Length: 164
Image (tube, rainbow, N blue to C red; front, side):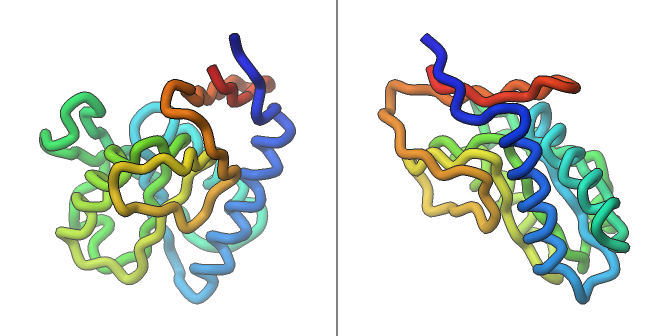
């Protein structure tokens, strides 16, 4: 059984709101790195980048972050070299903050490099975390049971999130 929790229009509105929040946070910076966790987190980062291009003159650089979700202790890799994001402002982005495992290992990777500012953003925050990690910018906070799963589907004109 699937319950739609976010429609295409709602995801679009939440993406725009998060873009404005990021712009407000980094308004005094020239550049911001949007580091999206591979697959849906990176797609979400691309959508935020597109909104930022419309509303701001910030230079936005996209970075894809690859984390083995089954074994997050493995090496985290990024599409940018360390010197391309060192001493810059960065937002780590994922679609769903579930247990916090993926996000905390992503945070750990970027903490090994000096950054100007470091924030996190998610489309849906499940509120069932194993780790002390939070999203600075979130589209929707939702308390669910541990047996329920949230899935985000990004399609060109029909993105949605559902609970199963």
